[in-house]
Image (tube, rainbow, N blue to C red; front, side, top):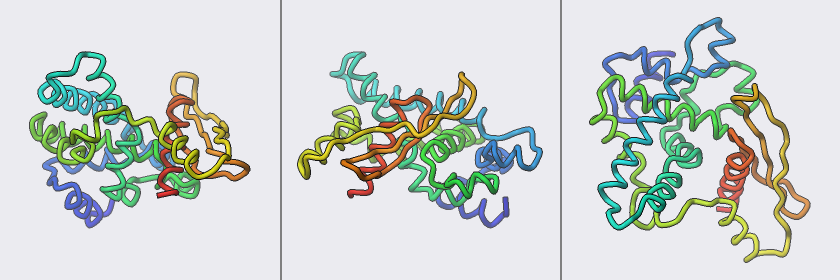
Length: 227
């Protein structure tokens, strides 16, 4: 990646990396690696970043939600550590401008694909953790997830399908349908593509590693359209 782009991204996220290679790897999508014959891309970092994020949010909830039982804490964590929240953070970072994608992936809308952005956010979190340690990574995570960590935002599970249903019912009698467009990938790592149909009109589409997750992301994108 061009040095000025790396500098720009570091400025956006407020981190100056000691090892710039780890950040470059975090921003390298598998499609780009395959196109260029590279052996490394950001999926392993994504795996690590998910664990770092889970630990950080779990620790935060344990310390700050002392009246909640295990079930409440689990639901709250699920509402925070989800693809939609990660995508929101990625939007703040303008992450689509910085991810290295293949030409085909760019043409198919990879720069704005929820799953691609969300995965890259986890990879960047892992890169921050490896470069600067857990305490620094924790401050980094809490800074960018603060919008959902306030009391009002974590009271209820972020069920975007329910929110969309309530919104549509307040406006029209049209029914909402979730249509599976396609699924890709091996059985252990499938990606599902779903679109929202309201009445006879197609609205937002979403992807996910399960049909349920894809439907939630499609509902989220549809809500954004109405907003």
